[in-house]
Length: 264
Image (cartoon, rainbow, N blue to C red; front, side, top):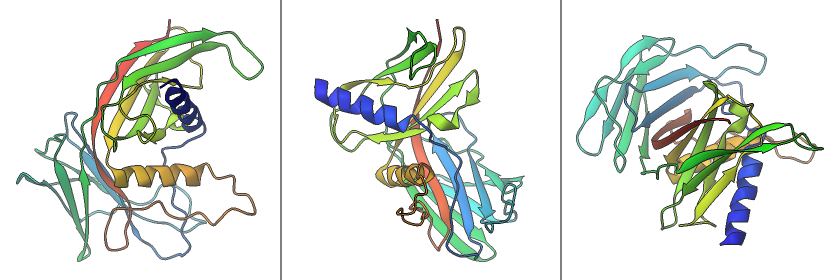
């Protein structure tokens, strides 16, 4: 078990460095394509989906939202919610509530063209605790309080996770990570985050249970964004979208476990 935990820590240390959550798509064509960004959770709604179109390499600024679409989300228990437009390509649920163990179905009709996706919402175990270890300044380390997240993985392989970290209410895009339980199934883990906060800073850690297609999407996206761009590396490709009809992006469903603590 010690070797397994050490491997987990190594994976987390690697994953918690220089990752970004911003969805950047490198296209090998100038053809415009629909981009879908949507997430359902088991936290209180409403939930939002954003539709936009890809831009050319030389275009600057955020992509323009796609308005006037019909957007519907349903589940495998007979609940259907037609989302209301909120402007700038955003669409918002009305009554839908995410429930672990349910499968959710997305449909958008844009200019007569239909796009679909589905995502299963796996349960996620609660995070156990969040502690801090003070370290003095060193050759490779800043002085400060280093967070450690303690958690357990339920028995049975196939659990996949995505993490978000907020410091004093601000999302830290460089601390996004994804991992699965292929090598530490059923064990108790200690995720040592390789960044320092200061005394009194408030840390919020969110872990999302994700299905295998979502894991593949985020893993590929993070690898692409962490690519050095060296001369022998392949041309960046789009992360594997689960949206049909040539669209890119991702529609997902996740149960969420959240823990907060103040560095002291």
